[in-house]
Length: 358
Image (cartoon, rainbow, N blue to C red):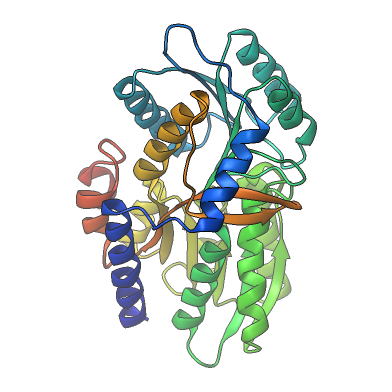
């Protein structure tokens, strides 16, 4: 297992570092799709030359969003743009009202991290007023947007379940899939990664497979408690789509005396998760290069606000539309590379050495 995870980290980290130094070469298809997308939404030109960016996040509860805000604010200031943040706290009605408020404040472009993927009407309303829309860390199925910025979430699911396979060995074992919100495109795409790996490996025995509304740790805990009871604690891997649900199920894993014995992973490398990785309770968490992703988001927002062309990394079919996409790099963080991640990769202030290593 250790050899596999070290090799996996080295490969992904190398790709991440290369990507940070050099943007992917644009294809003719990507460039033309980008131009076509911009033709659909003619941004209003600000009289003073300063672009006003509205950012609507689904929740303030996610630890990473505090850092997203800081990084985006720094980049906006560097580019001479104004930026306004709103947080919906997983309330779709509240988010729609907040977006209306942002429009009334004269935003030139909207960065939208949606509460639910079923917000087509909201996106269409914003774009009908000549305001480009960038979906961030989420997608809206069935709506044309000007840009999507996201990690490859199918890849995240694959990385997680493949790591669980390596941990368990060739004989496989019993696995619990602890998924996120069913209305979240992120959770759905991670699930697609699980499905792809499971189809390739019959030695995997999925004994529980459950989505959890609002990424609820309490509901995730109940799922795992039920799975442990139904299988006499005979479970070898707990694959969680995010740290929020991974941390929620730790009490059940400890109660079954499986901490440090069963595989447990998440995503986001929150402080509590990093601490558990160091202690050997969690095996792995997936890190998203939020610094690069945030900076590229604001750079694209300023260009879109000015009516300029952008060059995406690729074009994806999302909800029946060709959507220009900027891909954000991901990498696995394990006990073997935890200190390197903290020293060299995590944004300043994410965690202290004492918080993780004691």
